[in-house]
Image (cartoon, rainbow over all chains, first blue to last red; front, side, top):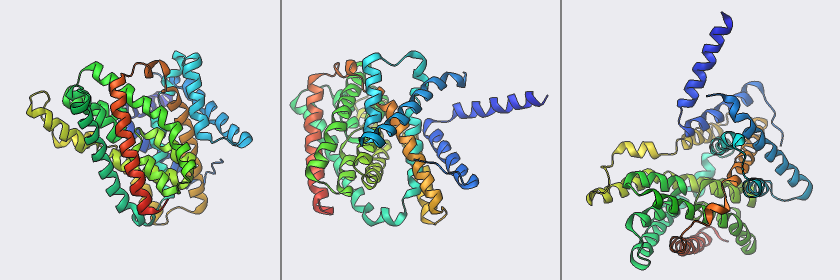
Length: 46
Length: 329
């Protein structure tokens, strides 16, 4: 039951992602990176 | 469609990125140029294996994401300091390039009108994307699109090598080199690569100048569509075209510039964001290198290449002189 709900959630996210224009996908990747750095104080090495 | 099919190519991009960074740390070569060279060698020495292609083809997504993140290391104050002048130069050089290509193509070399327009859009705005966008609006033929795209890619490959050499030879300042690359080179990836290979500041100015130029694509598509609609060889343009052709990641970039200007990020967060975009750029440039394929470049016609070469020399020289006068060499 739980895994079915999870599968549906993943499928919905994947479907939304593939529907996005590539430019908006870039914005989403950027926003997720900034959110991860801000919320989790993620340190990215260089 | 399985996400797993992207993994081999993504792993290859990541491996190339780590290798490029390792070469920089050990031998001192610029990591972005090494990344492009690695992709180029893969594509031309052994060919990109089919199973790597889906993942490697995501490289433009990472370039866009890197540009969005770059917004966090800039402030409105920095942009406004010289931004107005840069915008004028962008519009001036774009117009000059389009006019010179159209003039040479139609009146000197006798190329077909559609071919000249595709070359003008590719040289004046944003490389292959502009060729494809204008081709749709003016209903160009398949082989004209292929020739124009190959010509643009040929000059992307040449300018990636030549611009850094000229920049070093003339000892150009960061702002002059960055804006010069941004207003006169063709595709976004090579512009960002040579800019950041020169310096961090040059890379930021190169990217901002190029983004301003890319934002003109909607207006240029509408202008071409209107022109060809009068002769009945294209559909009617609409305002919707402006939005459709607008590079939307510029909006994400501007939001981060605004947040950084408002002091939302700590210095540690800004350092992490900067490192993140550096990694995204290296990933993207490994993929960009795979797009430079010698076999395709050989299919470029001599006349289109000559037209674009002459226009590039004019636009490049005029913009370099103007920028040196405005900002000092």
